[in-house]
Length: 487
Image 1: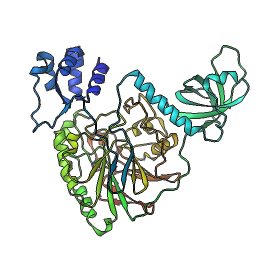
Image 2: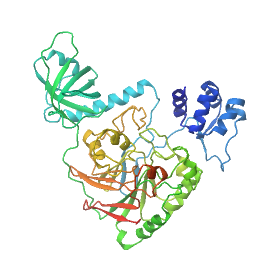
Image 3: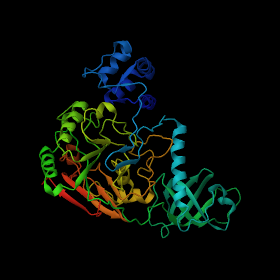
C-alpha cells in the first residue's frame, strides 16, 4: 500500500512526511480515501503532513485545513508544468539536465525505457574499445562453442565462488553466465553497470544455459582527456551542502567567505556553483526538527536568498538541488520550481542534478553525489572522508548512479540522465561533507565542502566533516586551488 501511495503522490509532484505516511499505512489502511480526496482538489499542497491528512480522510477534501502561507506560495497547480532552462547570457550554457523534460510515470515501461537507453548509449561507447571489435549478441553466444568472442551486457548479478566470480550479463537478446578466475578479474563490476567481456564459449552439452569463460572485462571509461581552456581569464568557485536552516550552519565561516569574495584575491571569480543541499530541509531524517534553527522550508530558502544577495553582483550563481532540497528525491532531480526561484533575486541560474554546464567553453559536470552512499557500501577504499574513488568509478563506468534498488532512489525516465555522454573537463559533487580534489585521466575532480559543522548523527558515527573549504578552478589555466574559511 505504501508503494502505491508514493507512486500516486510522485505523479502529482507532492511530498509526504514520514509521520503522515505511517498514519495512512497503519491507522487508515486504505489509500483509496486519500486518493479520492486529493483527486477532487484543484490545488494540492506541496507537502502533506499528518495534520492535513487526518481531515482529508475523515471529512473529505472540502474540509481539509490548509496552511496559511502568504498568497499561493505553497501550492502548485495540477498538473505542474516544468520550466525549461537552456541558456543564460554571459558564457553559460546548460548542455543537459532533466529540467522541463521529465516524463517519469513510475510504470514498468518507464523503467524499461531507462535501462534500454542506458544499455544502448553505453553499448555505442564500448564498441570502440580494444578487445571488443567483434561483438556478438548474447543470444547468439551459444552458437559460438569453442570460439573466442566479445559480448556487451548489463550486469544482473555478481557471485563469488570458491575459484573466482560468476557474473550474469544480459542484453536485449538474452543472458549469459561469465566465469572469471581471480587472476582475470582484478576489479569487480557493480550491479546494473554496462560492461564488455572478452572470453571463450566452452564446448558444452546441448540444452545448458550459455556460459562463457571470461579473460578480460572492459568498462566504457572516459578516454585520456586534455582540458578545454577559456580564452578569458576567469575562475569558478565550487561549494556545496550549505544546509541553511540547521543549527549547525556555520554563519561565521560563510561571512568570511563573502568578505573574501570582495577582496582583490577573488577578482577573477565570475561564477559560483553550489552543488546541492542548499538548505537542511524538513523531515529528511528522524527527529530532524530538534536540530533546526529554521523549521519552515520556505523560510529556509528565504534565508538562503538573503545570503546569496551578499555575493558580489559581478558573480553568477549556479545552483543545483540535493537530497535535502525541496524537489523530488528521486534522481535525476530537476531544478527548483518557480515558488522557490521567486524568493531569489539577481542573476541566478537554477539547474538540475546532474547537469552538464558549459562556461566559457569549459564543460563542468555538476552532480550532488547522493549515489556516493551506494559506492561506499560496495567499493573498497571509498569512504565519507575520501569519496574520490567513487567519483573515479562513476567516470570509469560512465554512469553516476548505476545501482537500482540501493540507497539512491532513481526515477524512471525515457532516457537515462545519469549516463555520462560527453567527457567533462571538471566533475564536481558534494553530499558527503568532505573536501577532495583529484585528477582522473585529465578530468579535474572536486568533492565540494560543506558549510555545516559536525551533526549529532556524524558524531555518533565518529565522522568529522571538513567544512568551509572553497575550491577555485581557473578556467584559463586548468589550475584548481583551495581556500579555507573554517579553522
